[in-house]
Length: 371
Ligand SMILES: Cc1ncc(COP(=O)(O)O)c(C=O)c1O
Image (cartoon, rainbow, N blue to C red; front, side, top):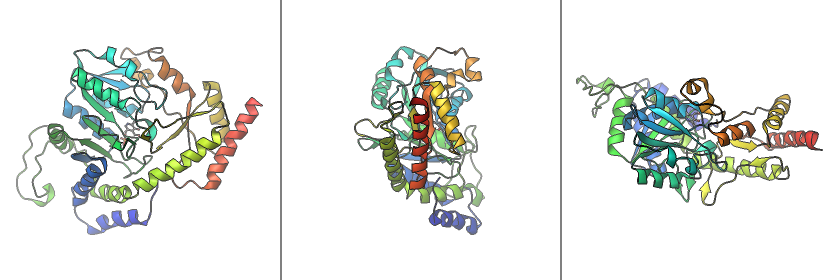
């Protein structure tokens, strides 16, 4: 994460105020700024991306219905489908931006399908998001976006999170901007917004005056959770949002330098932006020729004190999903891709020295095994 004194001041101000730590005016102010930044009517702040996704699924109602989901993602894209009473139907990954592959969706749609959950990987707009929108319209089902990793990414200026009927973002510490933990749900749909707002806070009808400052009795009109974002986090979110363009550009610059430096190594494939796409490079993921090389490179980097991680292992092969009729071989592209990817460090405060050390360490490895 990236922070400055303004962040500290913003949070401190709320703490020192000594009141409205919950349901403070910062929450609504943050939501309004996010809605404006994305160009949507409604944004709701949550205490995590997971609770935002959970609420999104409850708000559209998926009980007993199928939702087409990616397998190449973080598990929180899929678990909420189960928890909201739905049936996750896994589909393949395209190998350019690692989103859902449009070619593998249509034949999975049937009368039980309620929605497609698109996914924007690592700051990249999903290659097929517009085609997924068209398909969802044609089939009269909903398009949802797990845009948790891609706040600020866009296609020809249209931000990810605005293609679907409803979308979610995460503000956990690894994301382009962060509130420590936090999430967002965005939509243009009145009904989804109103339902999600009730679900977020005990099913309580919110009064003009906040709950903690009124003697008026509250109305509870459905079951709900406490998935609210605290006021301190919202204050931090407002402060972080001011930096988002700077942070995206800084990440893009580093990503460009890294891509250029790795270009001569023919065994390493880096992700490329499609025409008109704007990636915020929340992650920098490389693809190696095979699992053996990938694992060796990871060990080599570890010895050099460099952290790297596999994002992602296929969700359909996790125990709880194998127990639900998914098995190895179901999604060959996803399974093969998962064996070859490695996410290497890239963060806004990365110094030239750190970047050069990373590049040097990768080159050293390449020479060791290929010369
Ligand atoms: C793709 C994806 N979906 C959902 C989540 C869940 O977000 P959170 O950690 O804020 O609950 C994450 C978080 O990393 C994510 O990367």
